[in-house]
Amino acid sequence: LTATDHARDAVSYLIWHPELPAAVKPAYGVLVTAAIALMPGWTRRPLRLPAVPLPPLAVRGLGHAATRTIRWAMRPADVSVSSPTPHPA
Image (cartoon, rainbow, N blue to C red; front, top):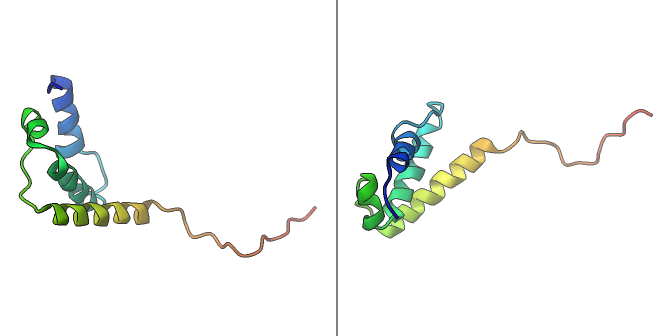
């Protein structure tokens, strides 16, 4: 693996400058932090990503919390699952 200019551009866009609504940036930031923390150092350094000084258990917890938050935010509107309403013929 090599860190190309295209890879660094992708990192810049996805990590440092994502085009997201302000409301989702905190959850996205937690998810990105957890993802970076799980990367081995040899993959982080060429992409100029920082080391995240968190213990693995904390990283796992942050990742789960961020994922649950994103799933909650993206779920469809609550639709009643009771018996279907008959349609006129």
